[in-house]
Image (cartoon, rainbow, N blue to C red; front, side):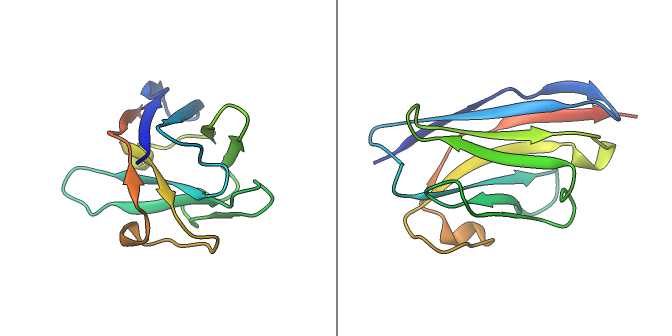
Length: 124
């Protein structure tokens, strides 16, 4: 079993930046893939970014590509998401997730463990 706790969300003006973090506990996640998702009010949870077990392979949603960077520190069992040039449409609850497989995936159903989420609000 893996427990995930996100942090780093908050209120930021459009054009600003935030760095989200996710701490895993319960077992090491160094051999698992991880990802970030987000869910805005009234919308389905959507994929944001993926990173493989080693951190050498990443994949981003078009909506954040070029404005965000996913990274992981396996020694600390943590996952991060740097968000830059934030837009009001980035407002959502952001979730980190663990996938017990090596291949990339963008569907929430492909992930096995989830955190509780951290709110990101971008004002115009």
